[in-house]
Amino acid sequence: MKRYLAILLTLLLAFVFVLPVFAVESAEDEEETMILFAESEEGEEDEDGEVYLFSDEEKEDDAAAYDGEEAPVLTIGALQHVIDLTSSGCLSDYEIQSLEAKAARLSEDFQMDIVLLVTDDPGSKTPQDYADDYFDYMGYGKGSGKDGMLFLRCIVSREWYCSTCGRGIDVFNDNTIDYIVDKMTNDLRNDRVGDAFAILLTEAEECLRAEAEGTPIPGADYGNGGYGGSKKNIAFRASGIVLALIAGIVIALIPMSKLKNEIFNVSFKSGAADYTKPNSLVLRDSRDVFLYTNTTRVRIQTDTSSGSRGGGGGGTHVSSSGMTHGGHGGKI
Image 1 (spheres, one colour):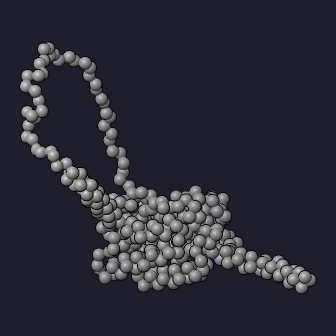
Image 2 (image 1 turned 90 degrees about the vertical axis):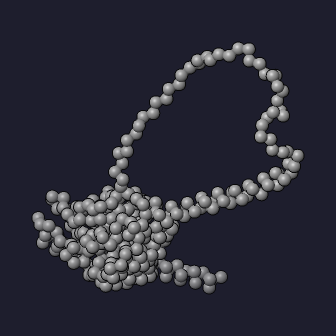
Image 3 (image 1 turned 90 degrees about the horizontal axis):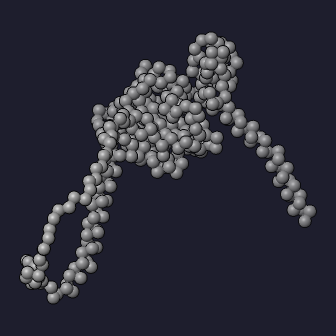
């Protein structure tokens, strides 16, 4: 009995002394994560309310050096292409490493930054503003046109947004974005963000390769005006309706044909003379009586909708940094 108590006490002491070590290492790793400072997050603001972006290592020096001037983009090391800002760590270390390797390769091979970002909630910003600002202020975008694409997934609000810039606006147009997101929907709905991001990178590579080779970009003519209204879905639903009608007719014909065969003593008659008695009906008086009128008024509704796509609209817009962005989003 004493031996078991000694073993239990040893394990308890080991747990007490080892746990703080892992907690310190985890805290150090979190400090090195690139963070987009916003009003809802911790950050440094000057007297004019300007928000600075900088690393913890360079915080005091950089804040003093650029006081009163426009702060540049400050990051730690090379830009990451896969960023997990969720409190629970939505992506595993293995997923981040494998996705980062492919995203970095695509960004370098095709000279267009492909960024995958997952966060709990965009806070006071809209998903569009959050995605645009993260792309701009964190220094993404290849070349003078800042070519790139950033896909944002918000776990709590269930929203997503794809922000495009430079060449990315043409390569990943609204239809192509819908085409890719339709393939990601099942994984996004079940919070399998790593699997969804893997699908996005695969499809993005096909789109970038098609652009480089001058061939049609996959999904460029996809859909008929919005996410969830794709031609593929419409064709699928229409074929399902047709098959259901055919099956219903076939199933109904079987018992009906059986009932028809049982009714053998009925023959076709072109008139009703055999069932009437001549001169048996005599109308002694007939007149028309007006009873009442009924008027129904219906207001004619005018269509004031702008025809925007669910969650973000089409075309381009200007972000808070002055950059032109494309893309749109939605909620899954």
